[in-house]
Image (tube, rainbow over the protein chains, first blue to last red):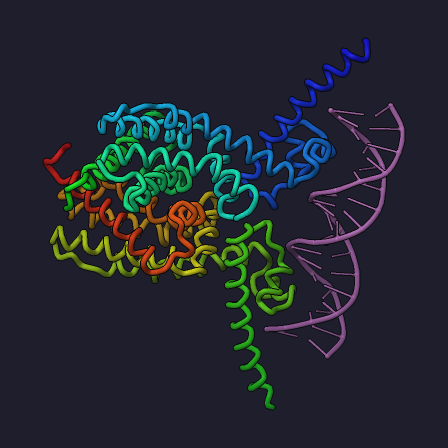
Length: 225
Length: 225
DNA sequence: GTCTATAAACAGATAGAC
DNA sequence: GTCTATCTGTTTATAGAC
């Protein structure tokens, strides 16, 4: 019962509380919106005290930024690393394959994992609102990932990676993937799906990958439909 | 100064106040979220009294439903009518053209008009939340429009309009268009665009229409890449 | 680091005068 | 149909005991 031992336990518990708070906050911010979520609710969901939010993050606004940091890390791990650390070695087909692997990873995470729903909603609401959080997410995640996919698509098509058509085309791919998360309820109703299991995700993947290949094929240098 | 004249004026003013309230509410609900928007704020933006919300809509929840109704009507006018009232007369090329016209109309509205930003955000937040409003929007707008576009795409490809690939493919088109509204800040930053003027929208349109043609071509009956 | 208690501001709803 | 005034509950933030 030395004071040091108690402090170590307290520190560990403190860090754990911090993580629990951020996790609960992302879930609730995504589900109900930032302003609509009360700090009491977050603390209850994290099995923590209301005052702990002020202690760990200085207030609700600090918690928002901590959520953005965790979300950026998460996305970086799921999709960023796949796309950044790969090396197509100058092969157009290989470049296309890497994009397809990244899209599959993104779909599995976004559509397949339940917690991704709230994270996506949280990120979207933050990205729609210019400010400090937007700058962090854009610089740390969106800009690097988009640029890298443009490089791969440039290789796949033989075009300049910064060609306007390539940059916009990569955004259309992002939109296709994202919609199956944001419009999931509409899709489920229209497709008569009860849930997004492996079979449903595979069906979506096939269509999106088909679109990517069709985009690459129809935008290859020298081919104009 | 007969009582009748006063009543007519009051009625007209009442209807006008009602519309002002719904307009301001869609704008604010979209920009900040439903729960994050106070009734005081809405009343102030509509140059109306706080109590008028309870009078006209029974409360904040009634105002939400009135907003959904106005949004559904708006979307129906912008995109629904183009797609529903058209008749390709069995010609695959004509069917594709109708889809392209609808996509152009949707992009012009969604990306080009400022008020569409808040309406899109409002609809998205409502559609992410199963409930009465979702049912109304799905039944009145999303289901009919999606089914109709599937019919057109079925004609364009020679496939069954309710083919899984067709239904999912139409959703990927929706996602592409929607992303340029939801991710507008990201797109603007990455493209180095100051605003979404006619030239920028035309660039987006060309890429999206190219993707639609590529989808139709690569999914024509009997052609499998 | 965690807790209780409380302060100060703000929410939606409504009663009643006009 | 619009207004003021007010009721009741909830919000974030914080002071201070442990």
